Image 1 (cartoon, rainbow, N blue to C red):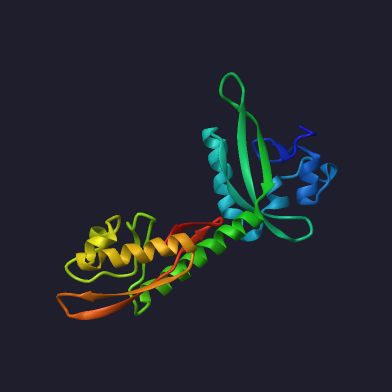
Image 2 (tube, helix red, strand yellow):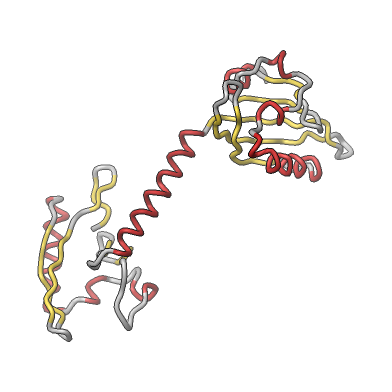
Amino acid sequence: FCNMPLAALRLDREFRVLDWNPAAEQLFGYTRAETLGLPAPDLLVDDADRERGRLLNQEIVTHGTPWQGVFPVRTRDGRLIECEWHATPLLDGQGNLLEILSLAQDVSQRERQARALLESTARWRALMEHAPEYIVVTDLELRIEFINRVGPPNSLEDVLGRDSLEFVDPVFHPLVRETVANTLATGEPGYYELRDIAAGTWFGIRLAPVWQEGEIEAE
């Protein structure tokens, strides 16, 4: 317990501290001596999160089932950090709750990165969906992975996963394949023009590779 790399807390059924290891001292800022006998939620839970914390604790005590998840902690110096918790009820032979072992680690950076990725993805999709041009992402086999909009009579469900060449007049297939092959070989953007036979309209197509860890994964 004392040598565990994660912050470890032994708590009674009222969530009073029975023990508190050195990693918990380092993470939360309170010494073991300061915490013994005190309710852990009073030390660690911010006022804004108290009701949610109370409901989680009640669930653990009532049902005697483990809980794992991310819950914020207010440290002694006033910082609010995101911690990943693993709370395990310890039961006697009759199923009565003896104590709760809670392990915690700081995942604030991971959570910030995850939120930033979600926000970035949302902004990217909003930009793509409202762009005046057609924007299409295909895999290396030219199957459609994303398209910002489609025209009738097609729907997104009809288009995603299909070979993009199905929507190109066959007379232009050699041109498309040649341009794609050159982009894959050189990593340089490409350009070609297509004509919509039915509408009699010409379209300029700009092709650019999507890189992942130094390799092209999409276009």
